[in-house]
Length: 144
Image (cartoon, rainbow, N blue to C red; front, top):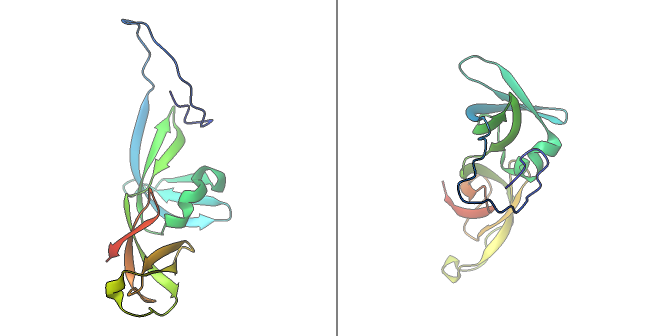
């Protein structure tokens, strides 16, 4: 079992036939609109209601978070306990060394994306190219 609030994981054995009360968890899709200091602001596009997450709640995922991106927020008792990014995110390369040699060799190089994240991309990717990144692993998938 995982406690979404504290992040702790506990192993527990249950007897056959025992019942567990189900947590009332709901998911809502909201759009990341902007960062306000150390808070990330998400907006419900139907009611225009804002939800905020602290930088510590977003953690490492902020390097894949781009304004205008739809995310899934997980609620428990009216409180945000987690959020999910789209699996594939489209980001623009802002910094990259010029490609070296023959791209058939399959070489890679580090590239900085518009969010500040650095990923290894094939040598044929240049500044200004849009790339698709797997937000779960941080791996380059393809050019967009």
